[in-house]
Length: 496
Image (tube, rainbow, N blue to C red; front, side, top):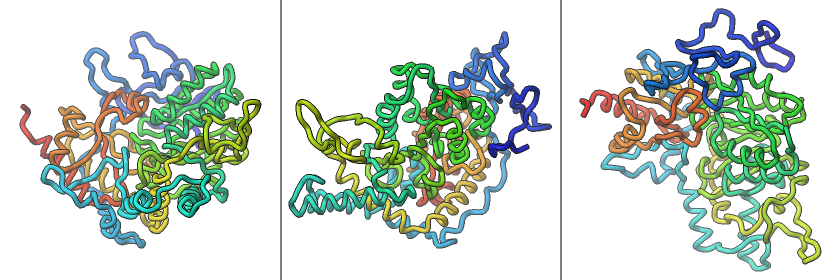
């Protein structure tokens, strides 16, 4: 049944969320209606559900044995991988793209580099390297306050970078783009400025259990100060956000919803537009963490109707230390300054200081000018590609990778939500994630191991650490095959 708000939802007694008709929970999973004697406590990320509606909670580790659960981790049966993507289909030529990324053509430990750590940072095309070098070699100047030629040139590049960010996010108003150091600073800015002005005792902030720490810890800090409350949106076994739980959590006290647009550990792409529309019915604002999204598919903040949207330059082929916060103009104009100093003022006196209009009022001090030059180059590079074709290529490559990993006996894939981006987080039985990442490194394959700054997401699956291979538009079938071959070799190696 589809309810008026557009979410499909099965209901039972008193509207309590139930599993689909005929559906069976995975082995070990349970439905929680409250604390039950003898049951292992649910993870903190899901603890709020213990006394409320029946959310499907993944099974937890055996506290005594210290083992990870067999479900909801996906252990697909061995099967041939999906058909490999066509590199030049639809106007996207992956080999031509790869030629623009110098780092892809180096060796590590005597092997060609296979870069599968894109979730942590993407590589930089030569156009970005050249733009940063040009700024420091011939264009160095501060911006906005100089009357000389170099200041005007640097200011032009800086503001063109703002315009490119506006184009990327689909807003017609470049004044809605605030430069920050990255997604982390963007969320902190909103929390400390908008949050301090709008949150009060008993107000609620909904944060999904799939969030990066950057979209959780800042809300915890301001919630403690303002005596507000964090309420987690739980996960389903495949890594999707529980939409029934979300609907039940929303209410008159909800002031803000913090959502990832693409999970950095599960790859999940939530229905952000639908969730935002529902939040707005309660008068809540929505902040979307787009750090993992903007490099994988086109984003339109107008279509999403997001109140705030943040991303980091280094996740979208640009330099580190530069990022973007989009905010609806009326919200930005109502936000008090978070930091004070140069660039954000109109006039300063001991009796009174007045502030510059947005976005400059929220950009205290000298910005990362070279970073913006690199960001401008990266976004122009990206816009020069056929984005729908590139996204289709990545979707095909992700499907191929998931099928290929399924041929590794016993490999447990964490999160297989439909429509996920190419984030492949997994466990290989009998191996420690960090040791496995080190073994792959010896083969020239760069992956990440650990909690991925998303501990609540892993905790929801009873885990503390896992290996993550993450794809970008320059990765190939050969990269995936190299990963799978190396995993099979590790698995076949005799125990030491």
